[in-house]
Image 1 (spheres, helix red, strand yellow):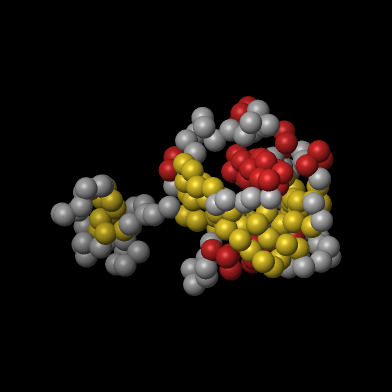
Image 2 (cartoon, one colour):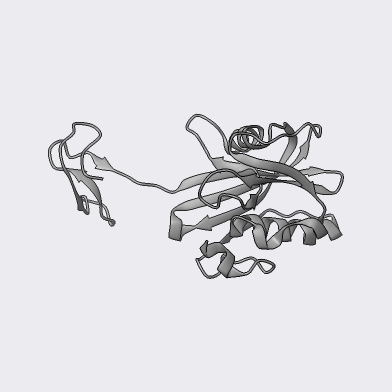
Length: 191
């Protein structure tokens, strides 16, 4: 950041009085520009034992598979963001959302949240951000081609929890090297 969004004057990186972290502060109007983590909300859409995945048509990780999800917008709840992203990426409606996984990713300033959800029907299609969309049984999941570690962890938890039919809310921090999925080699995330 170089200029204040309030008055257009230059900003500097400093610790404001009474604060404990450096921030961008306007040299003219003294506005403090806070930068906070972004929330990524998505769904784990289910249909008769299968999981819906989307192949990404955009960067990052174009061509890799993911659960439908994306950045939360202002004026919406996490659940609304997950429903909207699923509709945008897979052209399908979901219902019965239940909070399932929350991953803190402090190294990239994000929080990823996934809801278990039921597909209303199977009239899905690739949205503008997807190359293709499909339903997968556990044995068909393209583990080495998953776009993000949080997607891999969510899928692993789901298939483990499904055996017991118990789906606790999972919340954990993922550091860069801890972020790997047990089924997906780390080097695939370097692409």
